[in-house]
Image (spheres, rainbow, N blue to C red):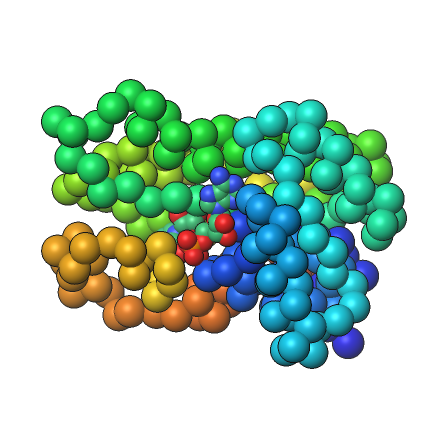
Length: 240
Ligand code: NAD
């Protein structure tokens, strides 16, 4: 018996990296999961990979436009239609940035804010509406970053977006507590994924030197306590 038996979770950015590992943990621990990706093709590939790894059942794919409220609401409703309810939202999808301040266009800066901040807001709104309609209870987990506490020396849109994720988390934790919907954020350090591999060594080295390099699985385990232990003996909201 898994510790999230019967729970229904949506994981954005679930096609690879940290999100894919979170999806596998949920499935392994008895949840039903909607794996959310940006393209049907990558969603299908991830579902095929999961099947190869033995996760055939209790998983579906969705690919709404995460900044579009109607698109997200329709996709989340399809999860409720298939699995009967929605208990957990993992706002994991994100993009990094490395551009110097003097080279940024407003459009580029906005594109990072869109996926890293507007998308978690839109998805949290859609999920909360469903959770409240169900009578309350639920868990929203946002993915922040260690640079959302300290900043970084280039690509300022990224830490700016993660500071905003922290603010969204702290505010929604207060707003949704009355519905017994817990809102938490995890702030991973450097985790070995495609996102990190695409960044220059000069940006990653100082971060790695300050902490041990960790892998997606370990990062996923740091997400786990936030949502998994929903029994009366465990309660946490607004963890950062
Ligand atoms: P990744 O690049 O491997 O995965 C990012 C995921 O987000 C992918 O599934 C991608 O398809 C999805 N995504 C990106 N843009 C999207 C869009 N427009 N619409 C829908 N989905 C989109 O990165 P990762 O390292 O697994 O990062 C996952 C989360 O963890 C991100 O929020 C990231 O900021 C955060 N994080 C990562 C690290 C790290 O060291 N890897 C550290 C701290 C925080």
